Length: 446
Ligand code: SF4
Image (cartoon, rainbow, N blue to C red; front, top):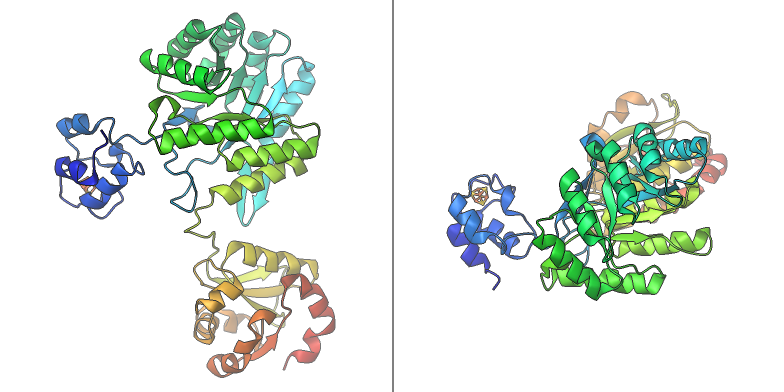
């Protein structure tokens, strides 16, 4: 029977030292009881307590590491079904499928391209995570050595053939690749390889029932780093299986399903693959394997992942302060906005598109957009005037004209009094900035 928070609290040190990242032992016990923390986070727990709590205090889904070093990928470790309940940890790894039948120079070029691909979104840079080497011509053992040499990303070795997998592991097991996959037909041999080479293993069942049985057998065999694959490949059955596995793991604490999952972006064309890929990122793949390779298609997946794995309680923010667009000087316009990353980077991009150098003054609104911040009274005459005074913009320009978003035009009068600046009402949408600079800015400044 699951332990209550109070049962867990009784065996914790009760010193409230906060070293676990939670202010009190009781708060930590509550997180443990809800499966939202791992007992490892408390460095002071005694061996007896650890033993008493083992199982009950374990997170409902294992965190599995693929690869080694700074490019190692952690997946799983989820504690909730819905991101608004807590957040999703360990973003879904995107694995680029590369077939072994490709001519070697094409194969190495594809791997190198995937490894080098980088996407800038709202001030952060994202890349791809894994190379899934798919044995479609029986040459996995030979090609694994080449792939390991070229790839800076961890590998997923995809073959049901035990001899091919063994040959591949003999040359690249040091990089801790993901073995994909153990099935009912090769279960004993593949689980032995996973043990022998100390690598994580995909368990593939023909359906959820078989997946459950194989997972139980793998756990009994002492394997801990497992990834689940129910074999569902069409979009609706994949969604159904992913949801059942996640619910069983999180809500019902079914240990055999308490592992991250693998999914495939399938479809008749690029749009179909993007659609199924985004679906699996949302619910609930730990790894998404795709043969998409164009930058635009992969940007869709990376963006979907960013949206799903952003902590909804902590909006992505930029620092409050003064930012330059182009090479502004003392006569350049000054635009005011909030520190929600998406807002700031949209304003920055639209200002760049105007071909006009400018200063952007960013007000700390705890990462909310202009109208949200205004409604919450975080984007007020006081906070804007304070930022203008303290950010250093008054030393950078010789004029005193500041452009505020058109959506908060109502602030202009009071803000002039509060800041001492002439307030110019800009466009309601930042997309209007280029036209605003061309046609309205000059006539509205003081
Ligand atoms: S680290 Fe351990 S002892 Fe310290 S507050 Fe957390 S649970 Fe309590």
